[in-house]
Image (tube, rainbow, N blue to C red; front, side):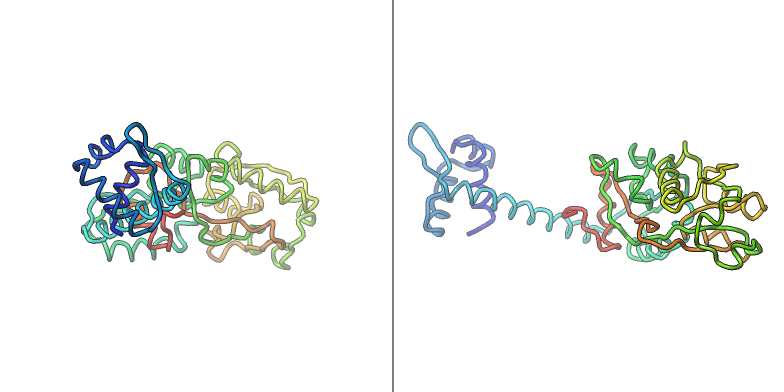
Length: 298
C-alpha cells in the first residue's frame, strides 16, 4: 500500500467518478483504475462498487475513506513540519503579554527560540488586556500570553494552551497592619479603599475579582481603578489603597508591597498562550513547539 494509492482512492471517493478523479490527480484514468485495483487486491476487500454508469463506496470503503483521510492529513502535516524545521526560517513573530506575565517565564522561552532561529525577528509587546485581545484578533499579534478567563468566550476564533495557574491574593503596603499579620480573610479588609483594574479595559478580570469578594463576604469600597497591574501597584505603593491581584503583580512589588495569597481553588487563574485560529504566519507553530504545543493537533 502506498500513499499515492490512498490519494487516488480519496479522489475517487470524493468525485465518485474515475475520469474526474484522474484529472484531479493529473494521471491517466487507466493508471488510476489500476492503482485502485491493486489496493483492493492487497486489502482483500472491495472499496468501490462501479459499473458503466455509477461509482459508489462499499460499506468497507466508507469506513476506510474516513481513516485514509486522517492518515494522509497526518502525513502531510508531518512533512510540512519537517520542511519548516529544515528551512532555516526567517520573518517576524509578534508576541504580546499582559503586564506581569511578561516578566516571568516568557523571556527564557524567547531567548531559547532566538538561539535556535536567529533569522527570526521577535517583537514583544506588553499591554493591557483590551488592547492585547484586539491585536490578537486583528492579527497585529501572532501569539499572546494572557488569561483563560479573557479568551474562553472567543473559542470560535482563538485557541489556547494552559501554561500554569496564577493565584490571586491581596496586595498592600508591607507596613499595613493587616498585611503585617498576613490576613487572608477578605471581610477583615472591608474598611479599606480598594483599587481595581479598570472594568472597561479588563472586564473579565474585574468580574472575576468581584466574584472572589462576593464568595468571601466582602463588598469592596472601590475608590480608584487603573488600566494595568503596574499602575495599580504604583497607587498602592503611594498609600492610596489595597487591591486583589494575581501573583504575577509581585513583579512590580519590590520590597514595598506584600502579596497575601487567597485560599481556595477559585482563586487560581489559568495563564495561557493564545493564538488566532486563522493565523497564517508559518513561524507560529514553530514558536509554540518551544512550549510543547502542537497547534495542528490542538
